[in-house]
Length: 262
Image (cartoon, rainbow, N blue to C red; front, side, top):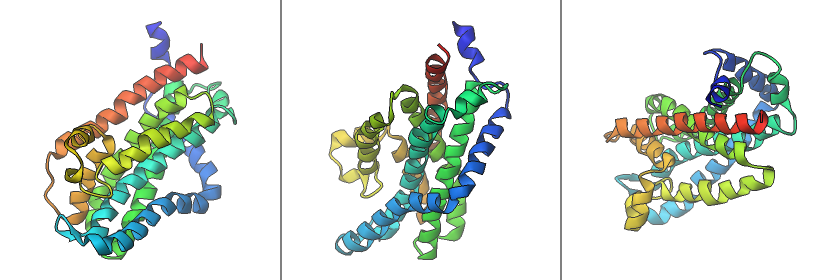
């Protein structure tokens, strides 16, 4: 049994690139609409809450509320872009379009496909997060060089959430089940992780929960970088994001192997 699961892991270190490239070539045809769609929701939060609520809130942690919010929206945009790409587009390629079935007739393994899909979702997350960062830098809420420093963390955030979403994709019988992940996991995480208000404003019990959330680890690195604040426990936050990226990858590969190759 163990040998069967090992056979589903990536065959080598480069097969996944073919999967990534296939998704990129398909995406190019609708690139503009895709980018605008990924930017719409966080921009609404940024200007809706930042301009409206910001007038009442004033300054948060020594900076304007909209500057505080913009850093949270960069991480949130990466989270939502990679999550939606994985639970909807990836699921469609696996089931409705049967793209995976065709790919599996080549030398590519399930692990190669999953790795390529995760890399592609992380790419889209990087584009979405960078797009929000560009808006923030243009409006003067962060420095351009700070945004450059944040890019690796944005990509890692996308990879971590894509990996988590791949587990949901592996288990979901149909599209209808994804709404539970969106409403019960992704949306609460947005409000518990310090994206729209400081975590220290939460009740004590919720603050303990926040410490294990991947979005909170992402924000705790991206926000200080963008706002020029000291980085605290950066190794812990990056390590946590790496764990969220790696461990679900192996779990989802095993689940998909059982689902697709019983």
